[in-house]
Amino acid sequence: MADARTTRGGTRQRASHSLEAVVAGAVALLDEAGESALTFRSLAARLGGGVGSIYWYVSSKDELIARASDHVLTDVLAATESVTTAEDPVDALREMAVAFYRVIAPRPWLGAYFQRDSGLQPNGLRLYERMGQQAMRLDLTARQRFHAVSAVTGYVIGVASDLGRHPQDGAAQDLATFDREDTSRLDDAVEHWRALPEAEYPFVHHIVDEFATHDDEDVFVAGLDLLLDGICRQAGR
Amino acid sequence: MADARTTRGGTRQRASHSLEAVVAGAVALLDEAGESALTFRSLAARLGGGVGSIYWYVSSKDELIARASDHVLTDVLAATESVTTAEDPVDALREMAVAFYRVIAPRPWLGAYFQRDSGLQPNGLRLYERMGQQAMRLDLTARQRFHAVSAVTGYVIGVASDLGRHPQDGAAQDLATFDREDTSRLDDAVEHWRALPEAEYPFVHHIVDEFATHDDEDVFVAGLDLLLDGICRQAGR
DNA sequence: GCGCAAACCGAACGTCGTTCTATGTTGACC
DNA sequence: GGTCAACATAGAACGACGTTCGGTTTGCGC
Image 1 (cartoon, rainbow over the protein chains, first blue to last red):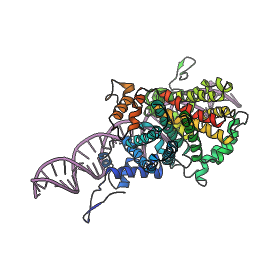
Image 2 (cartoon, protein in one colour):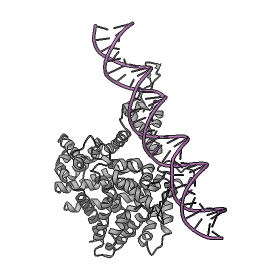
Image 3 (cartoon, rainbow over the protein chains, first blue to last red):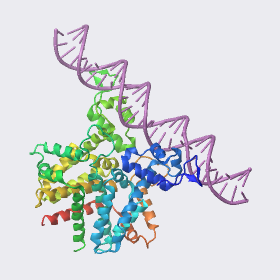
Image 4 (tube, rainbow over the protein chains, first blue to last red):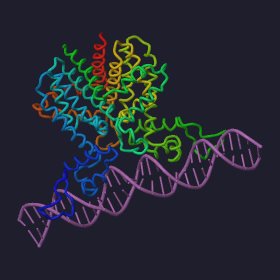
């Protein structure tokens, strides 16, 4: 990850970084301990350097997070590289969406920052383009294709950052609820829902058992299929 | 908005607040100048009091924003009060989703915080319940209803916070781009997209004209209709 | 070696959320 | 009306944060 600290066997007094190392360190901090753990001081400590050095590579924290966001999209692009020319365009769209979902869901910090400028970051644009190329294989107008791809990306970002935050999100409250860990937030919600008056909340009681046992990705895929089915129909399939 | 400062004609030395005034002030600050404008100090100044007083009503900034988020949902509930018993359940769902969209879209600060615990805030849960009651009028299984409503809410939150941020979002950079204002971000993106190589980005060029002239709400409704159409089909319509 | 630009460093500044303690205000009871 | 406890407000103080800035170190062409 971090690059070399030595030149020809001698020990350096000062660390040597790179933009790649800075961004990779930021992603690692975010993934390990959540958004609040990414500070310029903690990142500098991780890289073995000083606070000010980071500003040589990025001009602000916003740019740092934007680069971190774009960096993880590399994985999505790699995972969907093979599906671009494959089989059914709708299946290809679904596969890309699922790959996108799997990158966002475990990263609560991502969803909030994708919404900022998903069309401006280079890798985000590449993903958008790839999905669009599949849409171009469907019998739709340009406007319908634009709407369809926008709907899919919006759905992925919205649902992924909405559902994928059941484990601890900020690396806080380690003492209060410690035994249950993963399922604590879900169980709390279920308990709360069951305690609601059934007369006022018939639907909540209607689906609380489904909610208690649901798998996030299943819910995501089910909704995605509804959306893709609507697209299929519009394309006259 | 703020409550009385006087008791029986005498001028008080100290300000008098209330939870409602605190939350309303927070919403006003967020709407006027974006998320970064909401600080305990600026809110205290607006209420004419001290910093510490706010902590009598809320225990943290997270709670303050959670209460502010839930507060604006009151508008959605009011706007969709009449549609609960009306006509087609799918039309009712669409109307609620659009009302929800119209509240989130002009408020960039909302989207990020709805994703945190949309099912725990009381008004968010009420809206979820209302949508669900419409889903119960459709010929679906409990699981399918759960998936359908989750998909709609996720879609609304994702697309609304994704699209609705074309005007200035943080009340910063007032000097750099001042003449154009509203359309500056959109025009910048269009310009950038047109400059891309057409061979690598055929879809972007295919829809850039649609993108340049699009209306956010139209895109939202178009995608929503695709999703609702998929739900209709699943219900055997 | 020398000079110079690139890269790095950490002290310092202002702002933020939060805590703490002191002070003011209200209403009930005698 | 006086007393007391609970309620409510106030602002100074603290530590952490993003960011700035002047100075230091490094590597490379000459």
